[in-house]
Image (cartoon, rainbow, N blue to C red; front, side, top):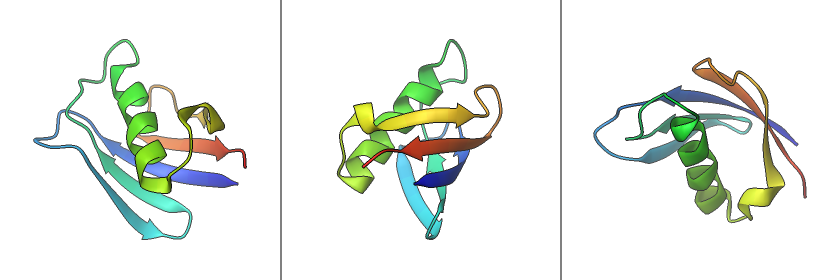
Length: 73
């Protein structure tokens, strides 16, 4: 399954909003440096979707706010 994620780093609190079936908005308190925000996004998606972090892979947009993740089930 492929999902698209819009990331908002340096937010006041961590939050996941599902806007469509395959589109999420994720706010993270982590800064967008050295992959910290990406790691936090994966942690939050893991909790929200109730799947292990190892099943979520960043496919596109490592340095962009618009990201594409692949979820293996």
